[in-house]
Length: 86
Image 1 (spheres, helix red, strand yellow):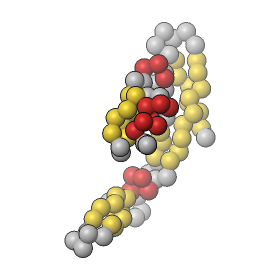
Image 2 (cartoon, helix red, strand yellow):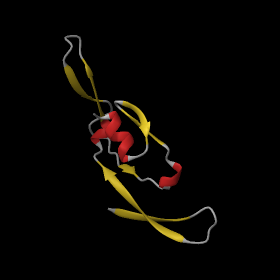
Image 3 (tube, one colour):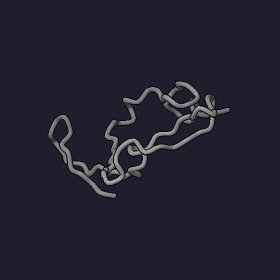
């Protein structure tokens, strides 16, 4: 995992933020139903194209009040997730 350096809003300290390098297929492919109702995975850009799928999160936990999931929205807590995913 790579790291980048950023200054916080007050520019008083530096922190190392981990950067996750995700699978580039998250960008190059999509899944959907074909005319027969079967799930198909298709390439959405030329095979020779290259992509890097980098992700990072610097949001302090105290500012995250809710989570949006495939099951709906819940409180950003273990209890909230357990309630949603019974």
